[in-house]
Length: 448
Ligand code: 9MR
Image 1 (spheres, rainbow, N blue to C red):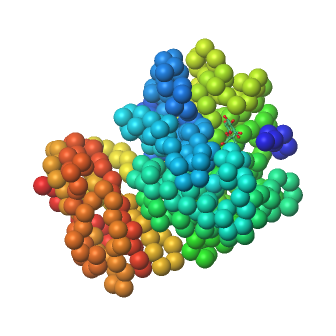
Image 2: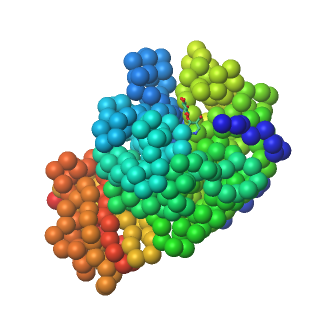
């Protein structure tokens, strides 16, 4: 794929960032500087992730950096179609599972990459067309999203489906030739298979307001208008030696459509601007409340797919580069918190015992998914129940990481065997899917 070289580098002004920050309710300042990327991003409710591969898990210097710096992982290749369904109907999840287990053991979230893409298809799929390909593709989405159900923070449901250049149109591919509705069919199948995952459309050369990003913008706007389930847009951000001056504006316009934005595959060609561009991208994400996380596409320069361009945050010896320090400083400078992050408190009010619950909704026409965070108070919680009022006309259709006996009106969700114990001040999350409009009143939480 090509790396964009057009566009004018523009350092985002601190003034622009502070105007956005001032308009937000919850702002984190720079008072508590964190010393790793993940911890620093977490201060504003964001993640900072990295692309990795199971075959590198035995590389100790590499894993030392992964485990120290990042709080989100994505499979650089291990969850792609060719890797997970090498023969039609025969699925192999070994490497993907290893990645998920590692992430879970280290308290990291996982991005899923990617359910459908014109590239890296297994040869059997490359040979299909029409209804046979459509059915195989949707089955792939369903099987893979079902296998990883409940373990993926965000899925790149469809990757790189738009053409480069000025058309703003879809890219020609075997998938596109099955009909223009293949993308929405994939998103619907993914939602049904894993209602708790955020569903993203992901692409490159979308690093500013241009014909390609506008084509995607129009698709997302159409999906939102028609109730196609989409929650996020991934801006890959494989960057050259300049940064488009509309980079932040582009993030903002997607956020204004009601989707999250994630920087999904960040790397920047080495050159005198490298550290500045990394920092500007970080600041742009932090300036938009719905820009919820950043992932870099590899650990050390020597791990990168861009051989010879040294586009990452660590050199081949695992040393932090100037770009690393620039990103960390930008993260520590703070910005508005993401909508789903806990509101930071400026003082230290006494924390009550018991538990509290907060609900976050992903709504579409006729339905929604709800993510509920159960937070323990000043004492550990052993068992919890959360009361939710489902608006009349709607009903809960399924739940994960909790059980419920009724489905409409007042509904009580109880912990399952593995998530009843929550440490003092800690939290756990469960979710449910429903028809109609989601609950608007605050949920109640009862410990014990
Ligand atoms: O980094 C990935 C590389 O190891 C693979 O050989 C390549 C195969 O196409 O895919 C690379 O990752 C791509 C990602 O999946 C989608 N966006 C572009 C990335 C870089 O090519």
